[in-house]
Amino acid sequence: MSSMKALVGTRIFDGTTWHEGKALLIDGGRVSQIIDREALPSGTISIDAAGFLMVPGFVDLQVNGGGSVMFNNQPDVEGVARICAAHAKFGTTALMVTLITDRPDVTAKAAQAGIAAWNDKVPGFLGLHFEGPHLSVARKGTHDPNLIRKMESGDLALLTASKADLPYILTTIAPESVSTEQVSALRQAGIIVSLGHTEAGFSVAKNYADAGASMVTHLFNAMSPLGHREPGLVGAAISNGKLDCGLIADGFHVDPAAMGIALRAKNGPGRIFLVTDAMSTIGTNDDGFELNGRRVYRNGGRLTLADGTLAGADIDMLSCIRFVHEKLQIPLEEALRMASTYPAQAIAASGKGELLPGFDADFVLLTPSLDIDSSWIGGEKIFDANTSGM
Image 1 (spheres, rainbow, N blue to C red):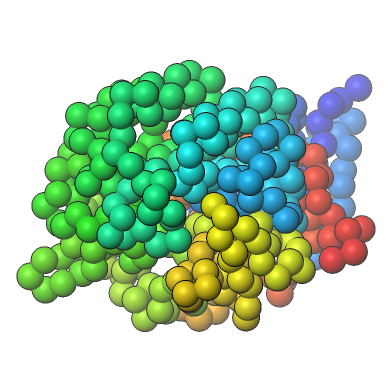
Image 2: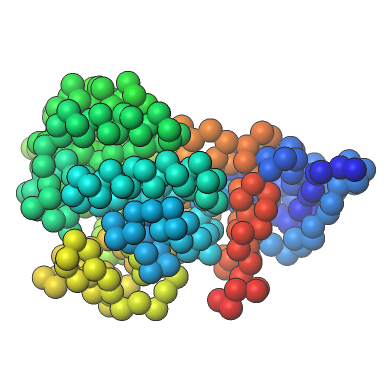
C-alpha cells in the first residue's frame, strides 16, 4: 500500500512559480513532486484543497515568545513547544526560538532546552537565536543594561558546544562586546553571526562581515543610522551583499517609507527578510508580560516598557506578509519569499522555505483573501483554523 498522499485542487506556489491545476505529492514527509492530478501513483491518498492557495511554510528567525510564554521566563522544552504551536496558527512552520539578554544560568538553560526540543522533534522548532548578552549598552533597546557584557571564553565555549547538538544557532552581537577573532571562531563552529544593538559604523561593520558576520538584526532598529558622511550599520547592511537583514514589518518599528527605500536599495546576494520579533502575546488576549523583572505593556499593536521603549513586536508572520504586500505594494510572491525562502537561505536551512522535490513538506493553505486555513509540517496538518475556534 502506498504511503504517499497528495493535496489536490489548490493553486501551488513553490517559492518561484505558481502551479495551476496540479497536485503536491508528499512521500515520507517530503515533497516528491508537483504533478498533474491524473498522474498520481496508484494508491495515493488524495486530500481536497480546492479553492486555497498553497505556499511554503513561513520561517521566522526571531521569535521571543508566543502563547503566553516568553522563552526567557520558561527556558524548557514545554516553553519551546508552546511558542512553536502559537506561531503555527499564523503559518510559521519553522522558527528560531530567541533568548533576549539574560543571566549566564538562564542562557545555559536555554541552550539545554533547545537541544532537548530538537531531540524531542518539537514540531516547528528550527534552532536557537541568542540575541545578546554581548551587545552595546548605548543601543540596548529593551535589553537590560545590567545584563549586557563582553563575550568571554566561557560564552564562546557554550555556543560552540551547543552547536554540536543543534542544526542552527544564530547569535546577535555588537562589535563593542565581541572581537573579530571571536566572530571567526563562531563561524568556524557553524554559528550564524548577526550584527545588532550596536553603535558600530560602516567600516567596522564591513570588517565584521569580512570576519564572518552574515546578518543584521532587525534593520534600522537599535543600530547606527544611515548618514550622508557616516553610513552606519544601516548603510552597511543595505550596501554590503554579504549581509542578509531581518526586518520587522509592523509599521511601528520602521516607517513604511524607510522599508521601501531599503528594499529598493539592497545589494545582493544578501536579502531583506521578514522577522516578527514576537513576544508572548501572540495568539493570546494578554495585556502584557514580565521580562527581566520589568513590565511590558500591550496597547494598540505596540509593546512597550513603562518609558515607552518598544519591547519586541506584537505581530505574527502572516500579518507581516500582508503589511508589505498591501502597504508597500510588494508583489505577493516576493512578500511570501521574504517570509520563507529568504530567511531559510540566510541560515542555509536545508529543505526549508520552498516546495521543491526533496524539501520538507512544510506549507500553509491560505484563502484568496490571505486568511489562514491550515498549517502543515512534514506533510502533517498541525493547525486547522476551522476546528480551533479562531
